[in-house]
Length: 50
Length: 131
Image (tube, rainbow over all chains, first blue to last red; front, side, top):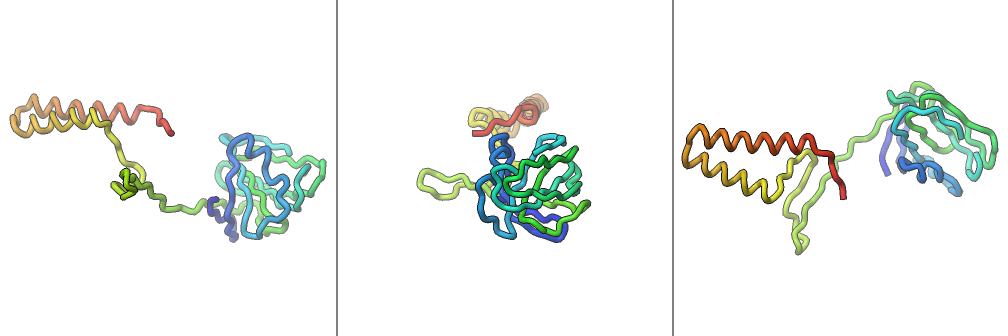
């Protein structure tokens, strides 16, 4: 997990960088701590639909 | 969002690490969530308070790599940026350096210098390989 800061908030995030990780995302996660999240990383700027 | 069980803030971030938009991810919803020119997407619990133009910062972590001997004792600590020369290159470098140090001729120094710079250039132009 990586630590990030965004605006005023700090999070510990797991990184989704492979296609498989990005497709799975947070599926089936039933509880997410307030200070945690997932960061999806793209090689280049993309137009995203999901 | 299909298959997602919890309500989320979906934060779209551009290549300059600025938040473009914040949209809501509704559990099990078939509705499409879209944004253009996205380099990162951050998913966190709903109502994060994050707004467009907020900036994403990655925390710098001090990472160290230890090289251990067969008994597990630390032989060397790497911080990143080290140059590593192969055993055979190092042997040649040492040989040329010793020769230049004892002969102290222009040609022996030149030979050492040329070999060293060729090795350095080869390293710089090599694609990194990771195991």
